[in-house]
Length: 233
Image (cartoon, rainbow, N blue to C red):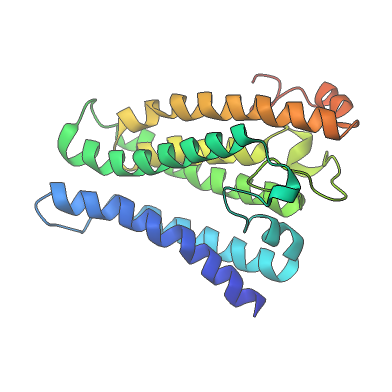
């Protein structure tokens, strides 16, 4: 039963991603839905996501369950209104990014596509990013998608959290930038700067909450200086 829940959760993410990439591609490329780079990307992404979600559902149920929450937490958990707005804006940004990639690759072509070796590096970066993001959730049963009160919450400072304070966000940014390069949209890769800005803004809000609710977080932030990149950012 847990494995099936993990599979269902993975498909809830993967199916919309596939539709948002392939549907615009088919519309602007003359009805052809065969986009080799996207099919490779979706195939590899599906392998990682399904494997990670099923494994978490079975072996790390607390980490799995905390990621099943929606964009709005229960009122009793005191989620800041600003976080609801920020998450909604971030969701819109993600959907827009997914739709923009095929439109730019097949129609707009705002910038020349990356050379083959850069695209290949992008694919490796994207897959590494997904792996980092799932490693972060695996190690942190408090990695909820929303900012809210969590009973028994503790500072996690081992594993990937010993390298950067927000490895989940770092992994997501690697996925966004790397995926855009592999799919042939240099403009979408550069647009990841907007996602970086939104992420840094949310980190600032999240860390203010953590410093207030977890006294040990300030010491952790002094020891682990990087938010997204060790010793840099």
